[in-house]
Amino acid sequence: MSKLERIATFCGQCNCGCPELWIDADATEEQRVVITDDFGQRIQMSLAQLHALVSDVKDGALDALLATTPS
Image 1: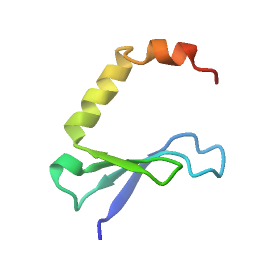
Image 2: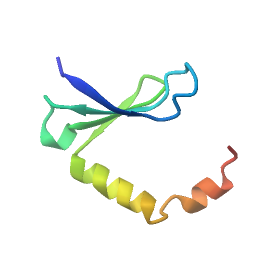
Image 3: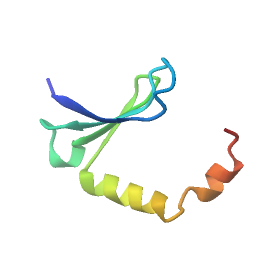
Image 4: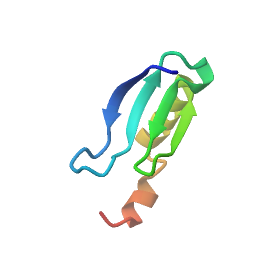
């Protein structure tokens, strides 16, 4: 069984099972980062992939999508 350490909860304003970011210290390097959603699904990626994702978001890769999505 893996040991997950919660890093962040996204939303957290409700009790719906908000998406969360975890680190799995027991996973391989390629699967160390775990993101769970409120439907019980999860994705796993490396820290390098998370870094690339965050950099892309900071650089505006999702700006057009978010501008058309109602809050």
